[in-house]
Length: 470
Image (tube, rainbow, N blue to C red; front, side, top):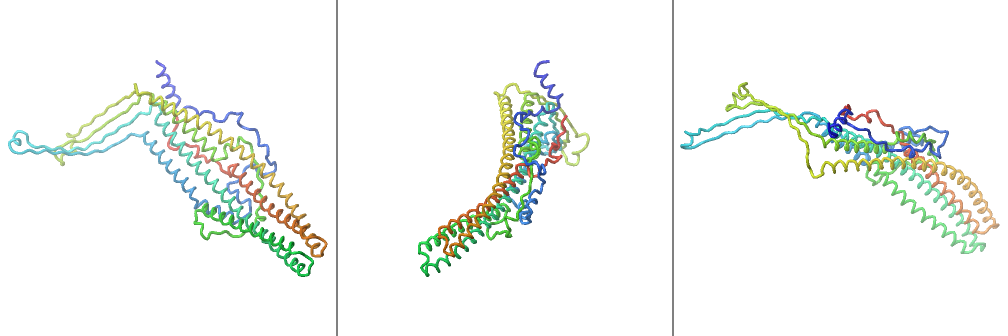
């Protein structure tokens, strides 16, 4: 036995596939997440957005899952991949064909006495079957099924991303509306002070400089309000697109950002994260598909055996076409072994191996980015939560300072500059609270996404449809 035959026999006895290489070395897998919160559920549930306690958010996410165009595109790609798997599956079965033909011949003059005209009718059935001795067709099907899985996982990753985008955009709109309300409250406070200043100017107790300063302050806040209104409209337009709706006249039910709860969730072990993110599952399926293509490229070096058969009827008249005396059949077998192809098969194998190496690196990159996503989200949730507490206490102190300075100014015990400074400090602190609450809630959304959003691989996702492995 030569080495080629031994290698072929080993492939045949091993079934139709070699093991997929280990993609993630142990040194790339951390033992735990450093910023994990201990007192919380380890993994989010599939409807994780319910934890925010906002019915409008739940309604918007349901609408996005039904109408988002990116989700629709991903679903169409799943159907395409399923169809391609069906094309590859057909190579495992015999190919049958049915044919019919007829011909006629004529003559003229003297030639009709020597060569009279004749005609025949034919009906035949043909069959061919390529024996998949070395697993090339099965590996092609295995690759197609893994690509189908990859498309499904990719679609699920898109759905998770869209859900997160809807939540972030919705929270951003609530934050902008809260900030606009703060700006309007600030404008009302400035206008109240302007009334006092006008009275004091008329009484000669205040200067026109004080009046100009307060008027400048109100114009500044009005400019900020206009910018916030622009951002709100842009946010509504973006949210409408996420829901698959035209942005014209789109709006949401007004809600209070402070009423949005901050659900607590913690991360489990990094090793478990590998089974809970659809993008990691997609990278794993891509690697498995690349490995199956490599196995198919190796099998292409071995002989291809094809069985053929045909049978049919031939007659000069339609009425006698299907008589047994007019029946004929034939069968055969063919073997094809490539002897020289200018390096085509070798280059195809090298290409398949390089693609596999690419997907090994892609899987590693996806896993490492997933670990970093969780770490970043955990850190941001913890830090923004602490910052929110500090800023709320800042607002309490700033409001007290503003009330005291305003009272003292009305009594003539303080100058306008003190009032302006206290007012600006209060406005800035309230605005920062709204932005920090947004950052915290969006960080929680990011954490839910980083942890896979409650996604779990279904049992049939691990089954290669239509493929029985030996």
